[in-house]
Amino acid sequence: MSDDRNESGHPRVPIPPGLASALATAGRVFALTGAGVSAESGVPTFRDALTGLWARCDPLELATPSAFARQPKLVWDWYAARREALRDAAPNPGHRALVDIERRVPSFLLATQNVDGLHARAGSRSLVELHGNLARVRCSREGRVVDRWDEPVEGSTTPPRCPHCGAFLRPDVVWFEEALPAEALERADDAARHCDLMIVAGTSAEVYPAAELPRTARAAGARGVEVNPRGTPLTPMADFAIAVPAGLALPAFVAAAWPGHAAGPDGESPPSRAGGGAK
Ligand code: APR
Image 1 (cartoon, rainbow, N blue to C red):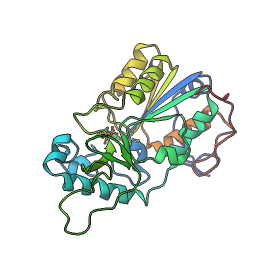
Image 2 (cartoon, protein in one colour):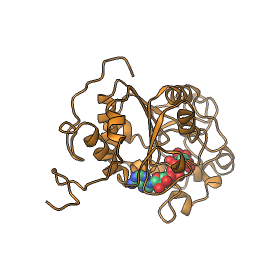
Image 3 (cartoon, helix red, strand yellow):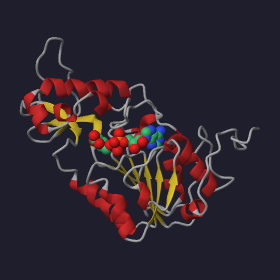
Image 4 (cartoon, rainbow, N blue to C red):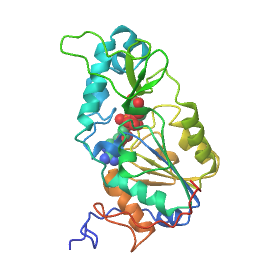
């Protein structure tokens, strides 16, 4: 076994002193994730310099209500292509480590900015999707979620239409200039105000109101850990930082908090110590 591998053969990740016990003893843990957590599942981030979606596409042309009003088919097709690409993506060890944490702490909430559904697929249950979900489609006029739709046939110049009112269908995601789902934001804000430990993983923390949540938690007295290979505006105010990809960092964090119990990156989740109904 080399020095940069642990007993299970997984890469050794330095966990800052005091962090493991902060997780193991926390009563309430709140996690906020962003696109970086899905990077190791092959889902592109938004703001990474070469690989991020916004390095190749202009968000104002694709992710705003006015873009959809101007070019609905272009916007529909862009999201349809991302939805299609997700068929090949699977949750990674970072997603699964957050499930492990949910099962081990008395009270837990995960708020994600990701629309890829990978946290739910990994098994996260105490979960709010702040920016919606790419798998869902809704009516652009009445907001009603539609279960089935036909993709536009070749040569069509419009998105599919709502079977109830005939308006264009759109992805059920939050665009720039739009409000987040109120209930999701309220749950996240409440968790930020009442947590002992906040985990912020894989987000550039540039998009509000999600980026406000770690500040809210800090102002309320929580300790904070950031998991991100690069610095963000939050880095200077984090109590702990793990500057390692989330798929390595989060399983190592779990293993350090509960030595002898936590699974390796490919292993099973440990049994629960959390009581029911406290999520
Ligand atoms: N592990 C952890 N973090 C990573 C990894 C990884 N393997 N790979 C990249 N990152 C980090 C990057 O360093 C960056 O700080 O993830 C972050 C991704 O940032 P963004 O691309 O800005 O994604 P996010 O913060 O989720 O964006 C917020 O912006 O366009 C909108 O609606 C979109 O929800 C999205 C929101």
